[in-house]
Length: 260
Image (cartoon, rainbow, N blue to C red; front, side):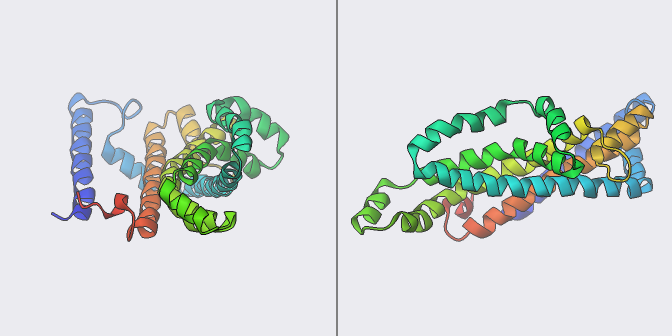
């Protein structure tokens, strides 16, 4: 079996087994839908309630993508700044760590109060969650260069810009794409958490609002349907980042050339 086929087939088999067991337990124990809905009922709810759920998905996806792109741009620029000077990195890196370890639920209310635009406040909150993996991985990649190649560039009197473009950036790409895989999922988590904290309502609502609203109404099938959309979105983002990594690294880096 081809590796690409196995990567799809094996998880699909596990998913079918888990869904079958789930359906069997719900049916066998006659669990009411307001406790645990069956997979069939969850999928039916996803179809019947697709209009509000689909609009909420688009809103959450917009916040996720905007925050992810912002995190990538800011994270790469900060990493380039760090790699230019050890003193700058030593002085500022602890504050990047501080952003990572500060719970977003603690600072999100302040950001929502300070920033009057709801969309901008949600993007800022989600960006703070997704930023650190980009900074950490890209900085590590820019630092992780072959000493012999660095000496070769120095021997040929390469400028700092030439060393950055032709040595450091190619060496950092595997680390950078690893950071993208982590950051894309964190951007989604940050968007959903920010929506929970903001309690957004009205026409511009995300999936977090659908979960809250379904919980108030004890509409547990819709809650599970919203959770399913969040999970599928996260998986889709990860697959997209893996695909981009394959395109960028597939022809030369060992991590993508391996056949095992």
